[in-house]
Length: 239
Image (cartoon, rainbow, N blue to C red):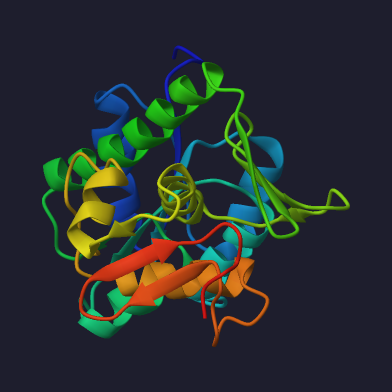
């Protein structure tokens, strides 16, 4: 198998589904690993560079949300979450944790394939654009490096961002002091395929505020313009 092919890890306790996805995704040109739980996931990730994790919500031991939080705290690996429950509250919680997409079981493998390709395509597009950009955008005590996709404090400490967090912050940083509606934000995030989180931009903004605002309850950088959308004020002049 070509080592340049994207490497996907499936984490699901259903052996039948693991085997199905292993065979199907391998046939689509991916390198694929499959494990049953969080402990096995940790072992696999310690020895392999993975481009995307397909993560079941209901797992023995640590559940999918716990594992997603762990992944997002320690890596930048995008996550597609699977759940047999398929309730809106699960999708919102998954979004708050920072997963990149969400798919309810049962699903058509071709739909999962489309979601995987969309997530990987967004990441590849971001990396391609970053190579031609040397811009660093500063606001408050934070510095956003578009080339390395890193947000750091004045003393160099890195602020942990998911890929979704970075995409949203980049859109705001590239459109300073400009009112952006929710629909405009979703379009600018460059998601080529609208997923289940399209009407949840408010949740994305709330999650990002927790990471960049001195007081998330009283934001000064990402301001809400009631009934219209959001406005990014890099000088912190909002109230």
